[in-house]
Amino acid sequence: MGSPVSRPRSNSHLTNPANPPALPGRQLKKWTAAGVSLERIGALLHGEPPPVPPRPRSLGSVTVCSHLAVTDGIEVVIDPARVGLTPEQVRAFVKGAMAAFAAVSAPPPGAAPQTERQP
Image 1 (cartoon, rainbow, N blue to C red):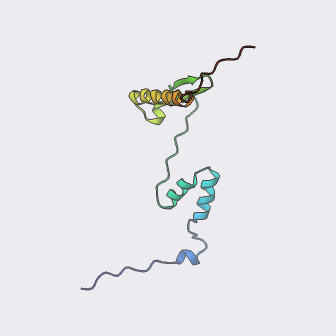
Image 2 (cartoon, rainbow, N blue to C red):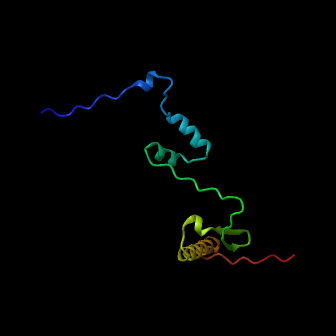
């Protein structure tokens, strides 16, 4: 008994203008216009599934969010239901965000402390 032979693929889409294939160029323009990064576009072109967009909130919907006041001018709004975090994960995120701010706002070692100027 012989081995099964696969049939050659049909090239009908090349000759049938009523059935054009999905062109990567069209998708590329759509994704770049939407602000998708080139790294993500590369992954999508290599077969990675596109992300499911978040469901838009309906009018009149009520959400409970946490507002983290890091410092004057920096506030982080966390919607745990949308992001899928547990209360423990939210607390860990808050601690990490505060530690990150403290690390970037601390004076470098050996620097003189800044004093406020008096008028």
